[in-house]
Image (tube, rainbow, N blue to C red; front, side, top):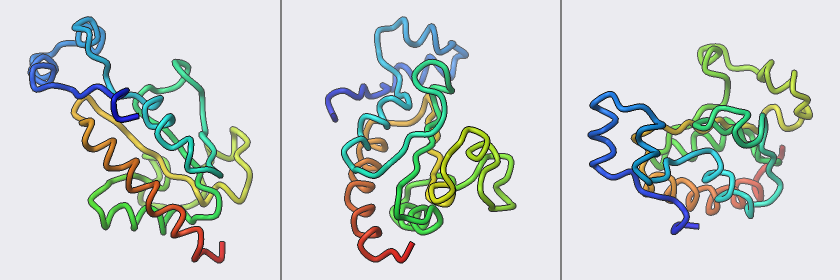
Length: 150
């Protein structure tokens, strides 16, 4: 997996700072990190569900993942303790945590509503950050599931 993710070089970051568009950056031949990279990296964790539109139909920089058997707040804090920032709710409801109305509307089953995290990427997300996040998820999700009453 690590080899499939392209690192955004300092040259690309300079282009981004100079106001280049994503299309112009991609024309340089370097792959930008997308939700597909994250999805590919979590696929073998097991008992997960990717929520939302597949591929190009959805936002390329956001992925919503439900981790069956792990409460989102518990996983969020475990990741936070390791320096990884994610969200357990929609961006517009950050101050009022409750199951996402969007997830309900797209038919996510009730037990998964409180097991979902949102991962957001940017032009400045590095390969190292993605690899570290995926490694951490592979390490802590099985442990949290073993000790979960959920």
